[in-house]
Length: 368
Image 1 (tube, rainbow, N blue to C red):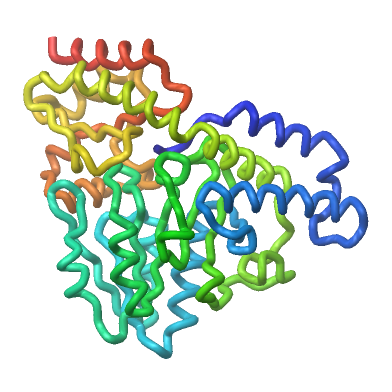
Image 2 (tube, rainbow, N blue to C red; image 1 turned 180 degrees about the vertical axis):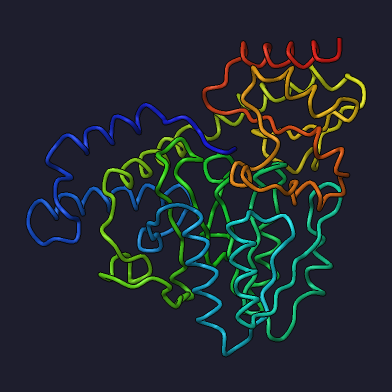
């Protein structure tokens, strides 16, 4: 959930790009080397677009989902500021969304932070009641990065679209895990990260709907690349890697999803009978790649010492340097003590049955 290993096919494409002459030039240059690099980028743009059923022209490359979120939220807020300054988000968004929203509050925008229930779900009736005549933007994540709960983006878009409210979705944790069809779901803006989809770190993308046209106010200025929304020389090898990562995800998603679901079931069946153990978040409306487990009968120290052989986390990697406890777990009603003895387990493309067995063994031995 924090990051994924690099897919070998992605690494091969990136190495070929770095070592050969095809990506030698600046993709904005008019000479042959620039044209070759530009062509590689356009292939990648089409690969990203294909996974989410969008048009290639609707894909803007960024340095990651954080930058995509900033461009989307600030760009939309400024573009529609004269129509209304009310923005809706939720209490369990990633910091890359919450911090942007809080900065806009300081500039006079009005923010509503929707609560969630104990399962991490948004109440759609409460969401509708929170809408105002001056609401111009809603920003809600597709899949929560800590507890893996899925928001019903189709239903949310069905509420915002008739009211001409722009909908931004942080899809960093859903792309490649669950189907996304933007030809059928009227989302206006959607953010992606390559390194959550077995691609390289340091590159992401923003989907910006063309019909009806979403026109953002730029928050960065420079050479005018990426339709003027993300100026700067494009990192050809990074973008090529992201394109191939999304291409592989498109090929493997259904088959891979079944395998991961099987591994998750095996893992949960192997530990769920232990005392005072609880799965955080809705047990059905979630991705199979995530289990956020509270070991209520054990101390933080015991868990840390006895599970140090496992690559697990207390929460989002982006909050590692923050002294505060998880705002997501707090929002679903966990006490400070429960948060301290909660760990996030994630399963991915390269997870093996042997690793699942080892994790089960480690957890069961912790109770002996």
